Image (cartoon, rainbow, N blue to C red; front, side, top):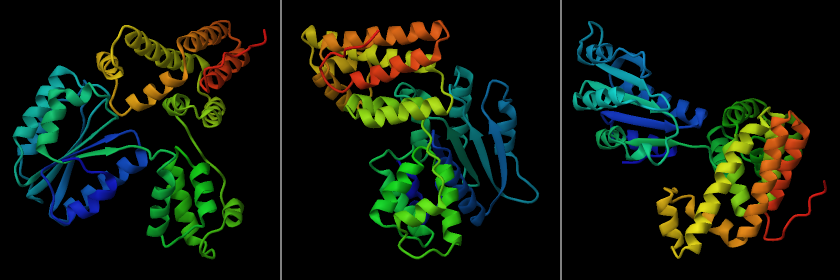
Length: 340
C-alpha cells in the first residue's frame, strides 16, 4: 500500500501497521510523518524506541537483539532504522531478515532518502512494500503548492486571498521548513482574515529555496522564465556552475539518445524504455523533443561545452552567462545568436 503524508491521519484511525517505510527528500514532510507515527505508537503502548543508522558501521546484531528483547518497562517497542543513500548487499539481506521477524509487540519504522527507479526494483524495497505501507515524501511542485499551502493555513485557523496565497507559495517555494515556521508565526499575530497580499508582504520575508534538479522540468516544458529564475536563485545560494554543467550535460545527452532512437525507427516509448527513463518523466522529454530539433540540441551541447570550459578556466561569470544562454535555448527550435 502506498500512502501520502496527508493520508496518514485517516489511515491511523484504523490502527497501526507492523512496518512503515517513509522515504523522500522533503525534510519537513518526512519529519512530520515520522513524528505522527511515533506519537500514535506511544498512544498504543509502544513506549520504548531504539534508533539505528544502517550505514556500513552498523552492528546488525544490536538491531536484532533490540527487536527480540523484552524491557522491564515496556512490552512494546519501536525499531527505527534510517537507511543511507545506497544499501549494500549485507544491509539488504539483514533488513529483509528483520522484516521476517516482525511480531505484534514490535513496530518497524524505516526512513530512507529519495529513491530512483532502479532502487525501487530492489529486493529490499519489494520486501518493505509487502511488510507495510510505503509513505513517499516529496516537495509539492509549483502547481500543487498553493493547494497544499491553503490546507496548511486552514490547520492553523488562517485563510488567504488567492493572490496572497500564490505570493506566499512563490516566496517559499522549495523551503517548506521555513514556510511551516512562517505560518506558525502568522497564526500568533491575530491578523485580519483572510490574509491579504499587502498584509503578507509587510509581515513575511521570502525564503524560497531550490535544488539543482528543480531546474530540469521547467526547461523540458519550455517554461524559460521560471527556469531562469531558478538558475539565478541557485547561483545566489552558492551552487557551483560546474555541478550544473554536469547535470545539464546528462539531461541533454538523454535527449540526444532519445532522438537517435526515434531516427532509428523506434517509438518514443521503446527508446525511453531502453534508456530506463522514469514513466513520470517521459511526457516531459517527449514534449521537449517535439520542440527541439537535433540541430538545436547540438547547439545547446556546444554552448554547455563553452560553459564547462569557462568553469575549467575559473571564469565563473562567463560560465553562468553560458548557462543562462542554455536555459533560454530550451524555449523553441530557433537557433540562438550568441555574441562572442
